[in-house]
Structure formats: C-alpha cells, structure tokens
Length: 307
Figure 1 (cartoon, rainbow, N blue to C red):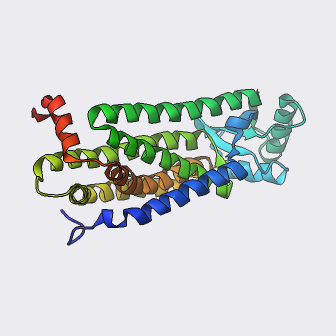
Figure 2 (tube, rainbow, N blue to C red):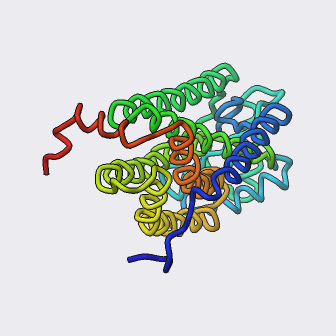
Figure 3 (tube, helix red, strand yellow):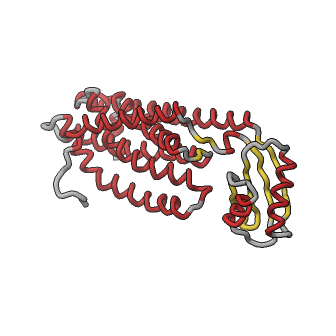
C-alpha cells in the first residue's frame, strides 16, 4: 500500500534539510551551554519521603495540599499501590528527618490516618554519578550501533547512522534546555529508547538501499536512494503514527511524573523519522556511496543470499 500517488524526490531537498539540521544542532548546543538542563531530584539529590494511607489517595490531592503549605516543587507519585505515595523534594536547609516530619504534619491536617513510612536523603554526589552514567550509556549505545552498521553494511552508512543518532538526542536535550522542562531519569530512559527506535528505522532504509543497489543496475545512486525511501515510506509513517498515538496519550493523560518521559518520546519519534530519511541516507550519499561499495560488501558476505 502506498500513501502517495507519485514518488517523492527526497534527495531534491537534501541541501535544505541539511541546513535545517545544522540550525537544530547549533540551536540545541546553544541552549544546552547557555541555559543548561533543568535536572530533577534524580540528579540533583534531595529528600525522599514515603507515606501510606489506609485507603486509595489521589496524587493530585497530595500535590495540592503540599503546594498550599509551601512545597510547590514537590514531586508526588504513587509507589507500589494507590495507598502509598512517594514525595521527592529539592535539597532543604533542614535535615531530612525534620523535612519528613514537616510533610507528615501537613498531610495529617488533610488526613489524620496518614503514616510516615520512611525518609531518605539523596546526596548531590549520587545525582552527579547518575548523570555521568546516563551520558556514558548514551555514548556506548552510539558507538555500539556505529560499529554494528559499519560491519553489517559499509562505513559510509555507519557515519550517516551515527550522525543521525547523535542528532536525535541532541535535539531532544536542546528542547528540554530551551523550555527548561525538568529532566529526570524517565526522560533519560526515553532518549535511550529513541536511539533504538531511530536505529530500527535507519536499518530498514539501509536494507532497502542495499537490495536496490544490487537490482537497479541502470539507476544513479541518488535515484536508488530515492526509490528506497519511497518504498519504505509507508512503513515508516505508519509505524511512527501508531507509536505517536500511544505516546501522545501518555503526554496528555499520564500526569506530571510521566510528562518528561512522554515528551522526550514524542519529540524523538518525530525527529527520528526525519533523521532516518534526511540525515542517515543523505549523508551516506554525500560521502560518495556507490554500487561498487555495496558489491564489495556483498562479496564479503555471501551468506546474505541465503533465505
């Protein structure tokens, strides 16, 4: 099934989209340097308070109660069940135990049966280590995928895919920095998921380009790349659309605790679809990809012919 009646000349616009990509990357770096990320308590440290209610409780009610008492920045979420609530607060001047008692006093005014289960303090050093480990995880994912693609296809494909995969998380981080949206561990997990999602799209396109190089002997490299993108376009758009339906639902109805996660996924799916078409493929073409390169890869890997 085709979504469009006639083929789209994607490569016709590759110079324009290259300019768009440069603007996105430069803008993202600018905001990351000048404004920085608004790290959550996962990275900055703070106080964690767990309370338990005898019946189910709405986190929005708890959040409103704390906001009225001066704890407007508290992160409130269910923990294990709808009766247990986890409250995270930025570093306070007082000790964690005193903060826990203050929170308990506020909540008891609303419900006398609430019970304080535990109070823990997370140091800034632990948060710093988590940020470093998160950055390392992203770096390892990028390097690993580049090595795989270089071995499976051709080094020009690897460069195109690596740039595309760096482009996607960088744009997500840039938007988070520009809007000063809280960046937490779920948002970091979303970025890692987007790297895999975008890579899957890129692999599908690269497989089709490789097949068409071996079939379309009279076409130019640009025509083959265009044909491959058009052949995989329906699959790419349908996959992105259906995934977005779920992610947008999370964005709209998932609450504050899932906002960063769902927003990062939403941005990543859109940007990842764009990058698999206009960065990975276009850059491979710009680097001089030719039929001879793919034929040499085919000769080295004759097992690809096996069903």
